[in-house]
Length: 383
Ligand SMILES: Cc1cc2nc3c(=O)[nH]c(=O)nc-3n(C[C@H](O)[C@H](O)[C@H](O)COP(=O)(O)OP(=O)(O)OC[C@H]3O[C@@H](n4cnc5c(N)ncnc54)[C@H](O)[C@@H]3O)c2cc1C
Image 1 (spheres, protein in one colour):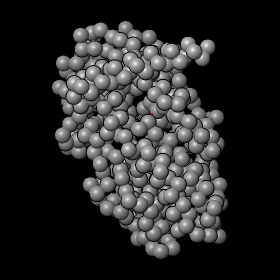
Image 2 (cartoon, protein in one colour):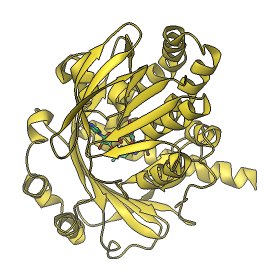
Image 3 (cartoon, rainbow, N blue to C red):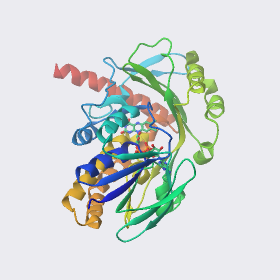
Image 4 (cartoon, rainbow, N blue to C red):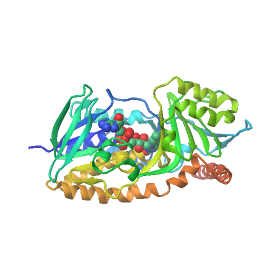
């Protein structure tokens, strides 16, 4: 008899796990809280680690790529001047630019017609046994049903319900970076800039970054520092952002972006939290993706980590087909060093996006300039 897994969450982590489990002869069922598959989302840079994992899951070739041909990034100053800075998307090994929805679309093609997906469904109780887990599911009509699975995978994002039900409250695992983010697609190009131009309007404790995409509207990312991000995340984004950015409205860039925010439902407004857990599995329940280790947007590795997690889980189950406990231990041992490495410098990396003081604001301007010049030099040497 094939082994059954319940995957909670139809995001990058959940679908990657589903592809890997199917390959190992498992029968996964995915439940998703939303009434339908989400599309769109924000700018994502996939570096080598993510590209390799996508290739291993056989979804890289089918993924829409949106890297502009000619990217230029600009540091836009409060006084209206602008200075060219290093391309923020080329920070390390050359990433490809995609939307979160492009990765999810490619993964969806990997599971479509192979995996049962139930929309509008959430877990409300989990009884975690030694060899199986019983999960009570509630669907959109409010009906509840209890089912038994050999493995339950919580891939339900940073505010995971599975984590709350089995491991403990958010506060036990959240490590706040002290920042808020609001990401959404701009409805129109930024006046005075060319297609392929990205820009940053930065000041102490607040930044607007615009990331360019080929053939799609750019992604706007407002970030700011606050003492109580959890409280801020419950507020209305527009009325929160307006006063914070009011005096930074260089050339109307801020006010036009906020107008675009008011006209879209495709936005994410949340506090930035790292998730740190001593162990990602308990009995027959495993966490994978942002629910387990949220690396935050500052790592530039969250989407990659979700796909790597799926791939590593598949390899661990292949190595230990008759011993799920041993497979989960192997998953833990393989993923820990990667996650530790990318969580280590999050606070420092957040300074590149949202400087916390004048020294940091100045330091990152100098750093972007050095990076720009060194790349020009390296490029000249390589041609
Ligand atoms: C602005 C921004 C920029 C980023 N840039 C990058 C980047 O450049 N590179 C990179 O690698 N990463 C980046 N990331 C990180 C990356 O987007 C995430 O790490 C990744 O999408 C997480 O995937 P996930 O599947 O773990 O979780 P999620 O994407 O949160 O998916 C969770 C899914 O579970 C569902 N769900 C939630 N609760 C329940 C429930 N109770 N029952 C059923 N379903 C539920 C949700 O509806 C959702 O579909 C960025 C993130 C942000 C916010």
